Image (cartoon, rainbow, N blue to C red; front, side, top):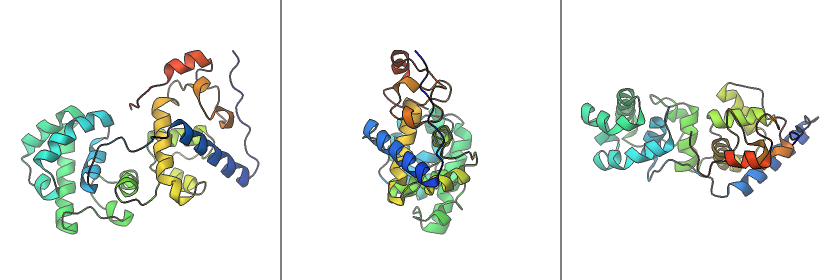
Length: 240
């Protein structure tokens, strides 16, 4: 079966915006349940979970956070945790010694500078140890309802494949995507792109033949184009 024909390059800014928003509508239909896949009940829990999610899966983080937050439920408690005990709890996430140090430093800074609370502003969040714009946008969008695009590896990869940007720097990618989408859509757009990247548009072998946005994708055909073979590549649940 021939590969899907790649979409033509938009000839105007308006065409690019219209195509990008059409893709978003298609992803919304495919992933109506798209959300943050880290479990949390407070901004502090989400901040710590996001820091722990580096170089591991959300599922692994979700496996340790119930015990973590039952033992140390807030910044004050976590800042004062016994390091050896904390490391043992975090062991399944990998790099557990570095992560234990990171979340304790983060907690101590929250206590010292913010009364133990997570600040709801980008300017304050990015000054915390171990927190960049990606982590800050996760916390702002999902814990505080402040829209923002989280440029993780999936979002960056899909934005380039879809022709929305040629940038590789996450801050530059975020700025270019901000210009394509309304502010209110940015957080949920991130979730839908991440869902699509984890389930269908894989890094090594995207399932082009089972992709809902293939007609609007300039990279169509770089992966498996046969619908049956492509469908077998689609994951029911996302894993990094």
